[in-house]
Length: 216
Image (tube, rainbow, N blue to C red; front, top):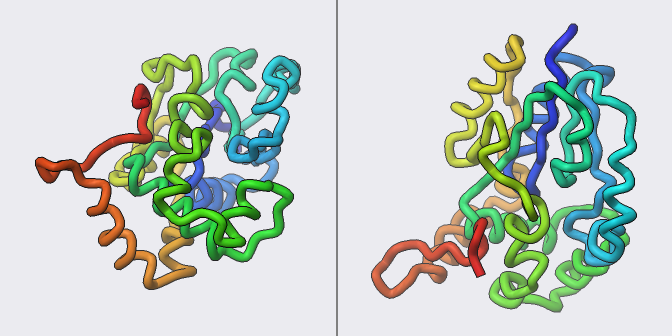
């Protein structure tokens, strides 16, 4: 099936796996291409240790279909006439989900930061203070990016609405059959999430946003 060329930035723990699986089921793996090679959460990846070399990867072939993954949007901006999509989530909720997923999920990875979390070197508060994690939106996924350049921002808290908008943009129908994997893996996560999320509340009772775009 022919669909418009589309770039989807799958920010970590923002529903991208469910979206990728839904699109792949509807369109097939020949149309939906996954790129999780950038190491956006790995402090020893090319993106973090040699940014110029990372940008040279922009000589990748033109997109034919949909590409989704953990990468910076500029990696594929040499492709003209593409639909540009980013997945976002409340930064506190995203961070908590990220911590619990790394802490307990069965994954094999050479990521030294992930391994440190797996060993229990960080509690949630210390994890939130790691620069790469604290500024994951501002200084990693969307560094130097004008967010208005995206055609669609899918917000996790209104994921079904965002997915429906993407469906219209692509001219296809697809279903999201997969729930949040962190919820699936750890039923206690939901309760802990609510409790720990409250610990980030400011004195006036509103949720602080220490990890979002433009934050310090």
